[in-house]
Image (cartoon, rainbow, N blue to C red):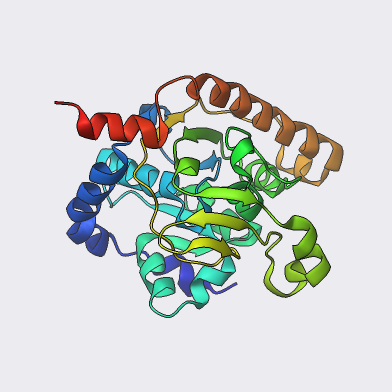
Length: 275
């Protein structure tokens, strides 16, 4: 583990650029974030759904809201895919904002420092799910977040969102083609999506940069879930799978409810055109 990566977060850098970042996010997505007061003090593992491809506007909205409420000084980090740290300049920027390469070892190290850690267990599978599945919580069978919470005694704080997946139209996730090409073996990427997005039109692949459509984004922070099991339970595969499903089903029920509220491109355009 590159321990230096855990110390690259720069609160002064965040503070200097926060206002401009907030203005951009507010103008484009007009986010509404409910329930941030539920995030407990000290260590916490925030578990979210991932939407909108690799631009992840739901994540950006949550970051802005978190900094606004708790300030850049609060130690908060997000786990990100290894590939983004290999992009020149982008990796350094994300590190200064508090992003670290995803992995249970890094997450545990941060939680043991009593930090707040944001993870999207579904990763690329969730972020690039087809548009018709935009209101589905997809973890892709991944359970590492539960093992991490058990090992560190950190409560899980679920977060659901709607609106971000309307910023890009994912026609298909291409998981079959990705498996045939062996992408996971070489890049840890499990999808090869076909998307409609600005400014490219039709695009193939998960690493493109695109311009998200303006879209009304809503996020809801759910009550913390304290796992009433000792750290040794992290080695119980059956229990870990059951707890992961409990978290997923809790999030799915909340997402079904949130999806009934106005969101998406049409809702954002209605706001912009309102007298």
